Amino acid sequence: MHLNAFLMGVGHHEAAWRHPLTDSGRITDIRHYEELARIAERGKLDSLFLADGLALRGEVTHNALGALEPLTLLSALATVTEHIGLIATVSTTYNEPFHVARKFASLDHISGGRAGWNIVTSAGESEARNFGLERPAHSVRYHRAEEFLEVANALWESWGDGAVVNDRVNGIYADKSSIGPINHDGQHFKVEGPLNIQRSPQGRPLLVQAGSSEDGKEFAARFAEAVFTAQQTLEDAQEFYADLKRRLPAYGRSPYDLKILPGVSPIIGSTEREALQLEKELEDLIIPAYGLRQLSHILGADLTGYPLDGPLPPLPPNPDGQQSRIKLVRDLAEREGLTLRGLIARLAGGRGHRVLAGTPEQIADELQEWYQNGAADGFNIMPPHLPGGLADFVDLVVPELQVRGLFRTEYDGRTLRERYGLSLAGVS
Ligand SMILES: Cc1cc2nc3c(=O)[nH]c(=O)nc-3n(C[C@H](O)[C@H](O)[C@H](O)COP(=O)(O)O)c2cc1C
Image 1 (cartoon, rainbow, N blue to C red):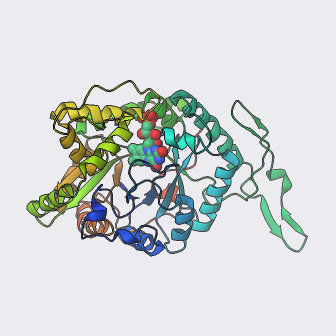
Image 2 (image 1 turned 60 degrees about the vertical axis):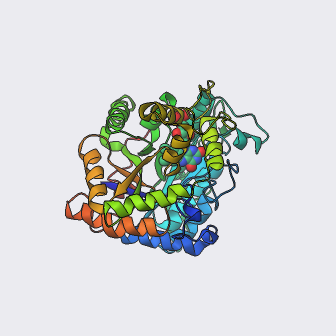
Image 3 (image 1 turned 90 degrees about the vertical axis):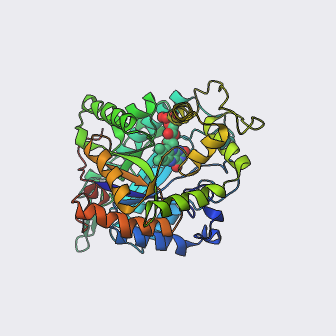
């Protein structure tokens, strides 16, 4: 089983910053993240992951995405950790491949082969406005992302394995024949190359992706080595898992070349009652008006003014928004007959990801069930409050998974790609 720690401010629960278990003054404090990284490494987790957005989203609060810029933060964390993978979110819509390829090669060098890239296409309209642009259509964003990856991969390949000779006696630093231009000339990019940094330990970062629309799944099948996803029920997760794995052979890849990690926010108590009590405490701190704005943001539709105790109103079509998440929220509201207030509470824990409240054994049972029934290769762990929620997971749930033989007890392999049981072959 693979476990990734998804870090966000002082926790994933929308109201975490108001709970006495957290100190929301630490959101831009590097020591907070150092502590989180050390806890995750103590638990032998595969990787850390930082989400990012290129605009201040929704309400100004602790989990407005991207408090600290991920590549900068992970470069700092690389120096205080030894084993854990470091996955940064970077957009293909508002960046250039040369910059991005260079930055990930740098992080991979700094961390000794532990860099990962969560490739996103940036669904928010406000993000486009920070670059003087209109949000490109969904299909255009994914088309650009494909070409972006073709260029980035070519740049990472532009230095051969043995290019740096470092022959000080004969004065030959590099074998120029193993370093060459890429001469890419496409619809979105024109890049000569080669990259201006030597090949990194992994050659390229672990490629991670999180879009679940048709375009998103096709993109993942072609490029991604790990996929984050939000799934609420075992059946939906199994369907997504099978669907995505089925798409791999068309790209010359095997189902083992891609790991699927649904998100889980574990609310842990020493008894079930204690866990439910903590869940209730967090729920009582939700500010409904804020939740409504967050919900409006997810759905891309303004819900302010609708009665909180009424149903989710019919939504206008939003083909360029986050398709998979919009569907998940609509299905959830319908399946559970939720009012807007109920929906806000259900989403406060994990914005659509699964929330599990229970004892360490109960949480391990749930993870085991999904893992052993074709729904997951591992999980994206989203602690409701930080650092305590991560420490509880590492100290209470991880040992339970280890006793059951489901999770490693020691780190093996050197690179992040090895940690996920992957080789470099098979990504086009
Ligand atoms: C666990 C997870 C993390 C994500 N992190 C980010 C992020 O940091 N930044 C971002 O712009 N989108 C993020 N997304 C959104 C996806 O990249 C994608 O845009 C979204 O799921 C909609 O894609 P789709 O239209 O293909 O379904 C995340 C999604 C998931 C499931």
